Amino acid sequence: MLDPKVFKAYDVRGIYPDELDEAGAHAIGRAFVEEFEPRRIAVGRDTRLSSPAMSEAVIRGVAEAGADVLDLGLVGTEMVYFAVGELGLEGGIMVTASHNPKEYTGMKIVRSGALPVGGDSGLLDVRSRAMAPADMPRGQAPGRVEKYDVWPGYVERVLSFVDVEAIKPLRTVIDAANGMAGAMLPPVLERLPVDSVRCYFEPDGSFPNHEPNPLLPENRELIVAKTLEEGADLGVAFDGDADRCFFVDDSGEFVPGDFITALLAESILAREPGGKVIYDLRASWAVPETVERAGGVPLMNRVGHAFIKHRMREEDAVFGGEVSGHYYFRGFSQADSGVVPFLLMLEYISKQGRKLSEILRPYRDRYFITGELNTPVQDVALKLQELEERFGREGRVTHLDGVSVDADDWHMNVRPSNTEPLLRLNLEARSRELMERKRDEVLGVIRA
Image 1 (cartoon, rainbow, N blue to C red):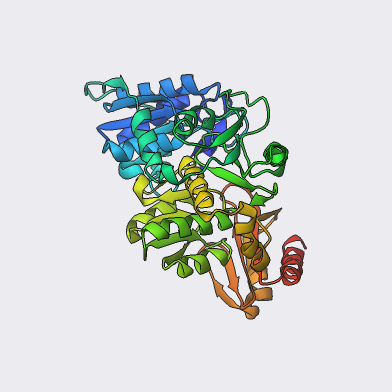
Image 2 (cartoon, rainbow, N blue to C red):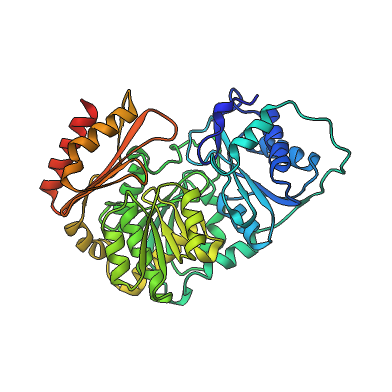
């Protein structure tokens, strides 16, 4: 089964087996090789119950089309990126549905250099080939399949981002959500002096405790409660394939991704003075203002990992961060990692010698953000036009991604969802009162 709607803007994702099954996975593996003609690729899989069979089908499709496969087995998504970049492979496929509920399956696909294959970088061509009947094999020999242990090299690489000696014995609560972080973190944690309270570390693709999506408040209840109960310095929650991590401070308060981007940028710029930092246009002023204060060059970009990774290369940026919890590192094939930000935060808090809530106080006192507010609308284009007419005279209007308005004391971005008829609002102001007033005005127009 291969429903064409499983091909999204950035990856492949659908319900198993109704929208995507092993036959579909086999067709996608074959189509990827036909489209990009790689000689060697890496394939990994997450902990979902369908992933072993789906991974085996992808590998078969790739090999039958003539490419060699390094089978990485059970790994986090970033470990596929690492293998592709480190070993100079010409592509990689991670069988994962990331943070989606347990009934989903999917794939994240990259080319040489761990560059993503998305809707405007070849994924639609892969879809066309996969949906077409397979040609008779062209007489080429099938590719070789070999198991490859990427773990030792991966662990060394992520640890190379920090000075382990500088990390203090902080108390941390970690929620792996029965996803890949439960497998990935133990070999890293055993090298650190931290005292970690481990929650749901057993990889289990039925996700018996909660969905592996920490962006939903109900999935953060455990990490918030446990951080307070344990008197921890830090709480960290990972998504299903562990390429994103989310932080809770010592007071149990969730830390927005833009504030984390600002802190990580400061930490990295201390080592890489004058470096360029990419951030997405939803972000708080906290990001560019912190980057400039730390002597770096802030560069705003449209949302989405394909666009950020491309810009990272174009600018030779040292770091990139998105509000959604994706953090990108030049020293990690310009790809995103969930484990590296966790390590950098441990080091940052240790070196600051202050509680995370204290470090964040100046940010919380100065930057008032709504977070992302989603509203279903019937006519996306019409609503965007209406918003521009209503608020455009209050500031500078840009169209990098949806509609952005930048005034002196507030700014907003409203952008359409890639997958459903939704508008996503992010707004910030210099005072709480102004933020709440502008938020209500903008939502009033969107929801009218």
